[in-house]
Image (cartoon, rainbow, N blue to C red; front, side, top):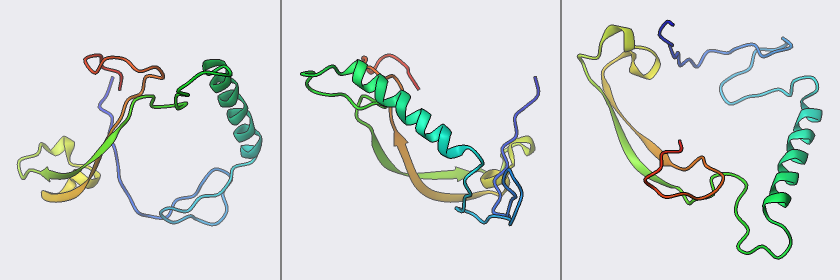
Length: 117
C-alpha cells in the first residue's frame, strides 16, 4: 500500500456534472442530491426516535453524544520536515495559527479512557 498524499489547493475545480468552475467555498447541487438528502434525513430521524422513545430524558444528540470543545492552536512546520511530507500547508516551513476541535464519535457516551475517534 502506497503513501497517501494530501494536496491543498485554492485553484478553481470542476465538480461532478461539469459546468462553470467553482471557487473556494462554492458548491453546486449534484443531480439527485435532493432525493439523497431526504433519505438521509429520514434515516436519521428514525434512528433518533428509536434511541429516544417518548418520555426519554435527557434526549441525546444524534451525533457526538458527549460534549466537545475547541482550543486555539499553533501548527509549526519545521524546516527539517522530510520531503515526502511536504504537501499543501506543510510544503514550506512556517507557523500557522488555527483552532483544534476535540470531539467524540461514539453515539453513546463512554468513559474518556476509551478511544472512539
